[in-house]
Length: 273
Image (cartoon, rainbow, N blue to C red; front, side):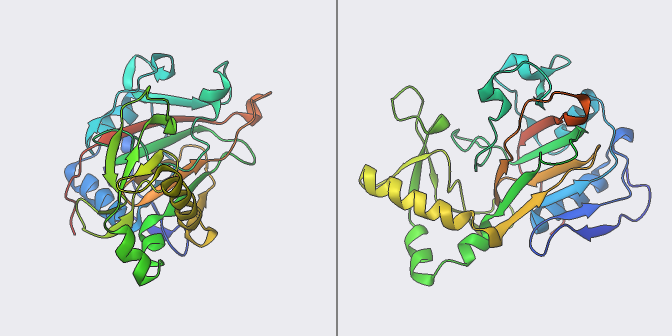
C-alpha cells in the first residue's frame, strides 16, 4: 500500500519512472495498482525500489495485474510457485537457461496471447553488468518515415518459439504495428527475435526486412539501460517495448551473483487514463 504520496523520478529522457513511497510486502490495494498501471501505460517501465519480497509475496503482487503465466520449465520455478521464475547466474543451470533472455524480444510473442506485463525483483546484484535493456517501440515507430509507417501498418509477422524454422513449433501471427490494447498508441510489435516471416512476402525478403527493422527498433536513441539496485522491483509493459538482458558470466563468488525473481502476466487493467 502507498505509505505517502509517491514520488516520481524519471529513469531516462525517454521511458521509465522510479516510484517511491510503496511497501508491496504489505499488500497492494486497488488504488495502488491503478497508480502503477497508469504509470506503466504512460512511461512503459516502472521501478519500485527497496522491496524485499518473498517469492509468494511477488506472486501475490503480480496477480494484481493479470493472470499469472506458468513457466514451462519446472526446475526454474521457486517454492513450488508455477508463476515465479528464478533468473540466476549462481547455480548449475545450462548455458541456454543462463543467458536465455540475452536477446531483443517481447515476452511470449510466439503465443496467441503474449505477456502484458513482466516484473523482476532484484535479489542479488553484481557490482557491474547484469542490466536489462529496454527499447521504446512507440518512439521507434514514430521515428519511421511516413511512407514506411504506412507500409508496416499493414504487415502481419509470422512468429514461432526461438524463431525455429524446422516445423517443430507452432506458428503464430501478430500485426507488426499494434495499437496498445488500452491507450491505442501505435508501436512496433515483436520486431525482433521470433519473427520468421511476413504474410505475403517471400521468405528471404521477409527475413531481410525484419533484420533491418530490428536494427532500427533497437537503435541506441530508443534504448534505456536499467542498472539494478538490490531489492528493485522493475515492471514493464511488453506492448510498448523490446527488452534484452545483458550477457552473464557464471558467478564465482557471492559478490558476482545476479539473481532475479520474475513474474509475467496476461491481462490489461484499465488504470486511470
